Image 1 (tube, one colour):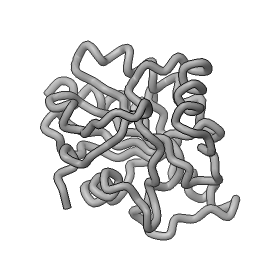
Image 2 (cartoon, rainbow, N blue to C red):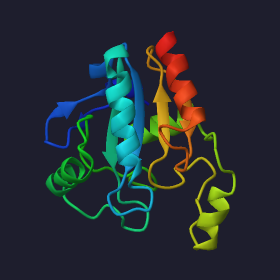
Image 3 (cartoon, helix red, strand yellow):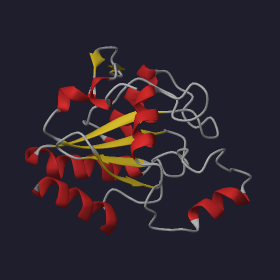
Image 4 (cartoon, rainbow, N blue to C red):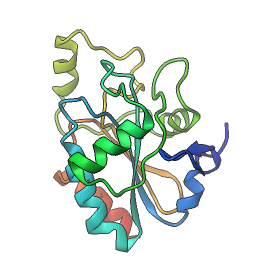
Length: 181
């Protein structure tokens, strides 16, 4: 398994990238979707990015269509949606898979490093189950907008469930703590 910083990525505009391009920064990696009930989190992600980017913070959005086909668009359509509806300026990447047999190596590395997520609402997974949505494995990404916090040294500093908002107390405190290191 490659170090997550060296895994090849593709930007939403089609360019080559890797997490190593953000070496020394605190990263918040989020699997995003444009047709999800949690899509308004884009606004809080952009706000966090603007608030902390001068301190060495980056939000990295990874569109994924794994959950209820809630990210059906092309990369161009997704980029346009994010810009028009939420004024997204943080880096976005090409659509990937975060679960299943075709899980992107980045997400495999993130999950291996942090197999469980911290939740601000333990009932969230029960709510999903009420809709017939259940993870195949307990370490799988639960839903759209799950978040991985990466420390300046490239290690995974935390994993947060989808309902944990970027401006919520748990994640805000974790971001501030990593930026202070």
